[in-house]
Image (cartoon, rainbow, N blue to C red; front, side, top):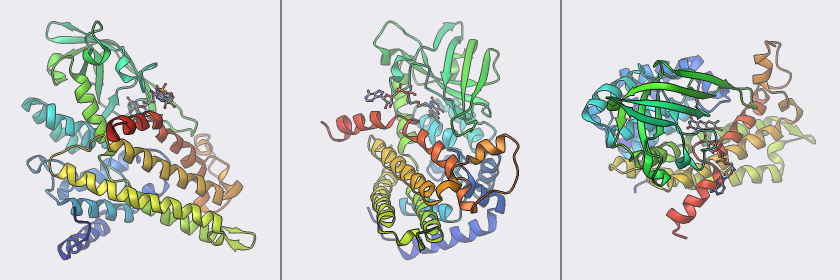
Length: 400
Ligand SMILES: Cc1cc2nc3c(=O)[nH]c(=O)nc-3n(C[C@H](O)[C@H](O)[C@H](O)COP(=O)(O)OP(=O)(O)OC[C@H]3O[C@@H](n4cnc5c(N)ncnc54)[C@H](O)[C@@H]3O)c2cc1C
């Protein structure tokens, strides 16, 4: 793959920069700098999505006839780099980056026509119903049942840790359609509108005091069989394909480079023993170590981009990209917290939840340090835990 940027690439970069400078509003840039949660603020992210749809740049990875840009892998990477540098809010991936590839590969023509335009326009907002109490890493043990009744399935059970279910109007769900075969062979992939009778969403507040995740309950929910993606009892294949995109379909290195830049700035401003923290060889070497790992991650993500651009999927190497980016991000949030000392101890999320709106004690860069650190811990669990990714790397990538 060619990772040198050509003159054409640089012209494209200039076009992207001009567009971002003209289109990003101050509240969008501020959101991307201040967000402490996995996803950006939903309203701002959807506003940004609308602007990108108008420009035709919302879904670079989609096939061109459905709204994709037909950019080269280099152009896609430049787009990611420039968005990170300009502090554009991240788009919510659930519909555009996770469900859409599944629909392209396994959806019927009717499903493609129904769902893809609404994912793009933002009319449909999706959440992911995979995990259940007792079925996380061991996902194939899931119990939420779907029993055929006429043209419908009747769904009963519960899903947990469902990110943004409080906002979603649709959920893509794994359900059990056969309990008498080996676990993976009795699973089906269903698309379920959240406004159907019998669905209830309860909030879960995390230790970072965020409301991002929920538990969703299904009580005799009637779902048309036409909402099934792929054949009955073959949902495991569909589910695994989606996970490749969840774990490694995007480029995280450009955002990490920006976070590294931010951390260096903090370390230059924070003084320890009369010297900027950045002059402390031990602290500087820990930043350097993260930077070196980011270089390696960038190379891997560029190779993945090339594979997706030529019609492939991220592949099992996405588990490696997931673990690496999580470890770097967690390393960054630890160093930031260390850098701001006790000013980082209060959790801004908790304080704002309790209605306290006095000025922050300490520099502005200390305000989000604790909330980010706490929220970032979840990343070694969601999308598949770190240990389980290591098992996949050992068996599927390394063939051990
Ligand atoms: C913030 C957040 C958001 C999430 N969002 C969603 C969502 O939107 N939709 C959704 O469906 N799910 C979501 N999840 C759930 C997530 O996918 C699961 O939490 C994850 O798969 C782990 O499952 P578990 O919590 O049941 O832990 P368990 O599977 O019980 O794991 C507990 C511990 O045991 C270890 N372990 C388990 N099995 C093995 C093994 N075979 N070898 C070695 N170690 C092992 C794990 O690594 C972990 O450390 C979210 C989770 C979090 C924290």
